[in-house]
Figure 1 (cartoon, rainbow, N blue to C red):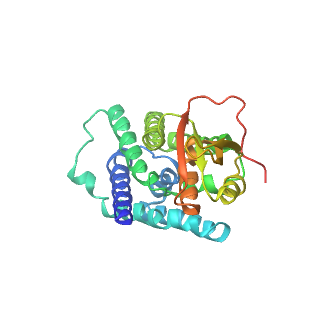
Figure 2 (figure 1 turned 60 degrees about the vertical axis):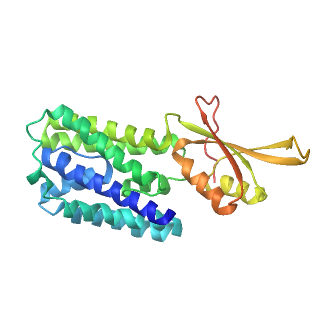
Figure 3 (figure 1 turned 90 degrees about the horizontal axis):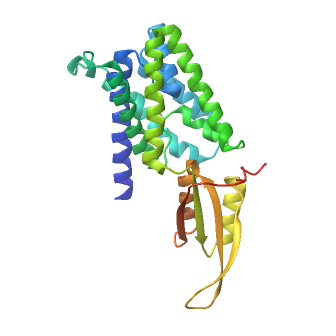
Length: 280
C-alpha cells in the first residue's frame, strides 16, 4: 500500500512539473531551473524536441551515477528522470487548449514557480530526485552543504544570463522570479522553515547507525549517556544536527538499519559554531 501511494505521488508530481513547463515556461519563454532550464534553451536554439533533450540530459547523469555511486542513486532517480520528460512530451499541446497568454506575465511567473515547487514537493517527499540537477547533491557529497548551494546557485545564475541573451531582460527577470519561488516553495513545503534538524536516536544498533551518520553522510554526532525514568536502565542516545536538506536521507537510513529505532526530530532555529561535514 505504501509503495502504491508513493508511486502515485511521484506520478502526480511529475505530471504537475511537466504541465507547468509546457504551459508556463515553454509557452511564455520563461526558463525553469537547473537541467530542465538548460534543456529548454538548447531545444529552443536547435529546434530539437524538448522532451528528447531532457531525457538525454537526465540519462547522461543516470549512467554517470550508476558508474560512480550506489544502487540507492538509481532507485532515487531512474523513475523520475524518465517520467518527467515523458509527461512533457505527452502534455506539449496543453497550451493549445488553455490560453494564459493574455494574463499578466508577472503573475504567471509567480504561479509557474508555485506550481513547479508543488510538483517538486510531491517527489522530494518520497525521497526521490527530480532531475540531473539534484545529482549535484550526490556528486558533491564530499563538500559542505554551503558549497553545494554555491554550485547550484551559480548554475542558476548562468542560466539567467543565457536567458537574457536568448529571450531578453524582461523574460530573464521573470524566469528568476519563478526559479526563486519554485526552490523556496519546494523546500518549505517539504522540509519546513528551518535550516537544520536535530535527531535524537535510541536504537539497539547504535554502532551501525553511528557508522552510517559518520561514514555515509559525513556528519558528526554526540553520544549521550542517559538513564530510563521507569526501568532505570542505562541507554545511549545519539544526537546529530544536520541540514534540513539531508533530513530524509538520515531518517530513511536509520529506518533501514533498525525499524524499531526511536527517533525524535526537532527543528533547529539557529546553530552557533555549526560543524560542517566531516572530511574524508
